[in-house]
Length: 541
Image 1 (spheres, rainbow, N blue to C red):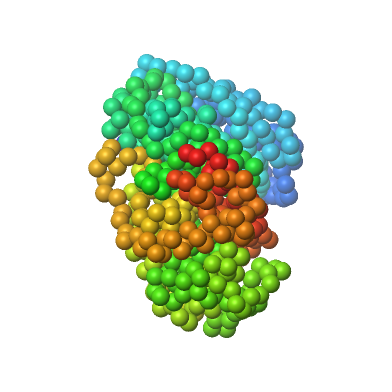
Image 2 (tube, rainbow, N blue to C red):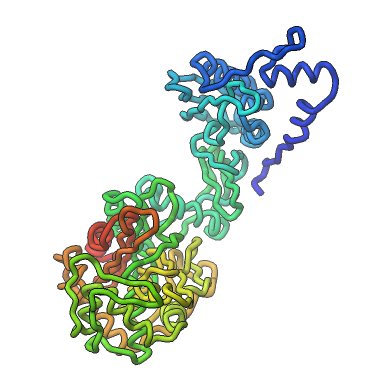
C-alpha cells in the first residue's frame, strides 16, 4: 500500500444527506428532484435532451463545486453521485490536488471540453498539474434534471472504471531498464514498452537497487496491475534493470506495427529464449503481444505437422492430399478461395500452400489428445507455468471432441495463442529445444523456468524444410522476399465471428531470430502480419 493513501467512506455520508427525516430534508430532496412545491402541485417534468442553457447550468454547477473543493456537492450534480463522490474525495484527500482552476471550452451539443490547472503537494514537495478532459450532460432518468454523465475520465482522461488517484511515496523505486547492450529503454523512445516498463518496475524495482520517489499515480482496480505514474514530485534514485531486449529490433518492431492498426509482434532469440522485441499498436493500449488470446489460424499447422510426424502418421515427403473440401462430424471445411486441389500432394506441399483440408483429413488418424500432448510436452504450451518476467499467456490447445477437434488442427476451434506463444513455437521448431521466453534474466530473481521435451532432430529437419519451402515459394514468399540467411515461415488467417475480415497471422525465422505477429482484421497472413515480421527479422537482433 502506498504511504499516505487512505480510503474515503462516502455511502453513509450520502445516505445522511438525502435519507434523513424532517421538513428541511423534504425541501432538499424536492429540489434535488427538480420539483417546486407551490400550492401542493409539482412542476411538469422536462423531457428530451438537455438544452444549451441546461448544459451550461449543469456543467457550471459541477465545475464550481469541484473548484471549491466541495466533492459532495459536485457529486450530486452527476447521475452516479456515490461513485463520483468517492473519486472526487480521493482527488482531494489521497491525491493531494489543490488550487483547482477549470476553464470550460465551447460546448458541442451536450459535450463540454475543459482544461484543468491545479497543484499537487505532498511531503513538502509541490508541482503544477495541467490536463484536458470533457464531460457530457444528460437528463436524469428519474429526476429529469440536467446532470453530468459520470465517468472517471471526467476527472482525468486516463482514469478508467475502478481507478483512483494517489500521491505519495512510490510503490516501487524507479528503474532504468537497459537493453542487452546497455542502451537505456524509455517509454518516450519505445512507446510499446510503456506498460512493460511499469510491470518490470512493479516487480523488480526493489531488486534493482533504487530508492522510491514521490509521485502522483493512477491506482488501478486490478491490484495485480502496476500503478501508472502521472507526475513525479521528487525523483527517487533509479536502479539499473537488465533486460533481454535489443534496442535495434525494438525500434524496428515499433515502426512496423505503426503501419497496421490493432497489431502486435514479438521477436525471440531461439538459442536462448530471450525476448528481443515486443510491440503493440492498439487503441486500448493492451499488451496483446504477451497477453492476447486469439485463434492463430494456420500458423498452428507447425504444431499440427509436428504431431503428425511424431505420431508416425505421415512425413514431410509423405502423402497429405488436398481436396477442395473435407467434412468432420457434420461440418464442412474449405480452403482459401482459388486454391487448386491436389490429391497427390505431400505434407510439405500442403503445408507450404496452407491447405486446410489436408490437415482436416488427418483428424481420423490422430488421437483426441495428441495435439494437446504435442503442444504441452514438446512446445511447452498450455500449462500456465511460464515466468517471462512480466504477465503473459502461455497458450491453450485443449483436447476437444466434435467439429472443434478438426478445427484445432488448423488453428481455429478452441485453440488460443499470443504472438509470444507463436514466436516460441517457431523457435522450438527451429532448434528442437523449448526454451521458455524471458524478458529479464532468470538469474535476477532465481525464478524457475518452464521445461518441455522438445523435438527430435528428425522432426526438426522436416519442420525446417517445410517452413523454408513456405518462405521461398509458398504463401509466405512475398513477405519474406529479399531476406537472406537461414529462413522459414508460416502464414495464418483466422476467421472470427462478427468480423468482416479474418485476423492476419505470420510467424517466421531468420538465423537466430524468430518472430510472430497478428493484425486483427488484417486479412491473409502475408497481407499485414507478414510485413511486420519481415521488418523485424531484417534487423537480425
